[in-house]
Amino acid sequence: MGFLYGEMAQEESDAAWNARWQYHAFGSVANFIPELGDIVQRGVDVYTQAWLDDELARIEGEYSEERYVVTESRVNQLGSLADAWYAVNSEWADEETDHRTESGRANKIGEAALLGRDTK
Image 1 (spheres, one colour):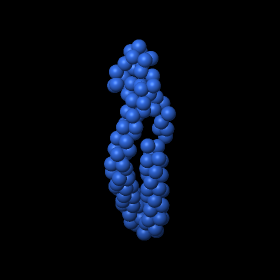
Image 2 (tube, rainbow, N blue to C red):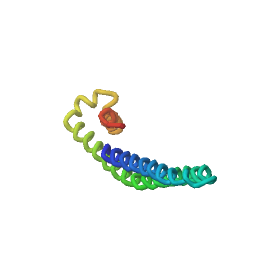
Image 3 (tube, helix red, strand yellow):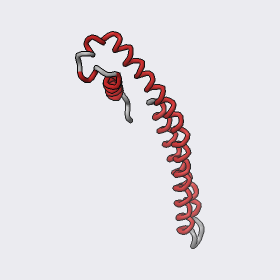
Image 4 (cartoon, rainbow, N blue to C red):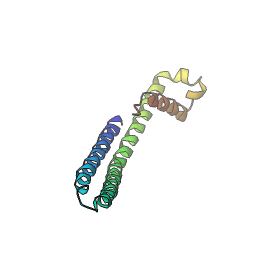
């Protein structure tokens, strides 16, 4: 799932840079308008922030469905991994409190998977 976060972070970063460029481009022109430059500059501020907010909301919406699908796939993979592990280690697992039940094994596998997850 790390690839989704990386892609999403890149799109968010691009959107922030685009908003900055818009702000500076329109803002520099607005400053040359006699007597109205400050008021127009404030309008540019509001516009670029609103644009950025909308763009970030669009990006979040775009990735939320994809994250759901990937998460479901990972949960199924971890369940299969727990089943395969138990098939090999059932004798030992049946003696260990945390590994006796299917949900206990799934929790342990999930905890181990989270330890290796890149959360950047």
